[in-house]
Amino acid sequence: VNVAKIDGAAERALSSRFGVRAFPTFFLVDGWTVREYDGNRSKELLVKFAMESYEDVEPVPFLFGPFGPMGQVRAFLMRCGSEIVGVYEKLTKEKGLSPLVAMAILCSVGMGLGLVMIVVVGFLLLRKAKLD
Image 1: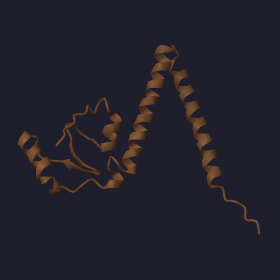
Image 2: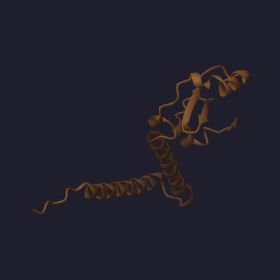
Image 3: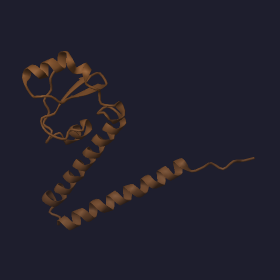
Image 4: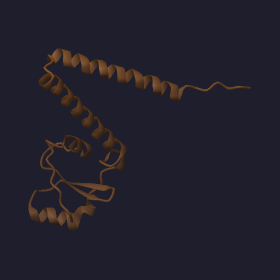
């Protein structure tokens, strides 16, 4: 059994992907199957869970699990949010812009990207004319 320790406060996208709600949280990952440990936090019980009793725990449904589409979307959104906060801090601290101007720039870029995405999706879903 391999064990990994993750700093959930620093790795917010990974925490969101796994649906971590409190610390510490323990998961057993076996291929695409993920099981969450919900017992006492003693070393003996954790080892017993990892070696024997994990099969008694219902796995996280793939659709909502960390490797499924919803987990991937949660991680993507958290990464995007972290990047936006990083850009905001760069604009205010390194470039010396006021917070209001930095927010206006970020909102304008966000609205522009949103409009571009709407147009692209609109063209992709546009019905083709039938030629009879």
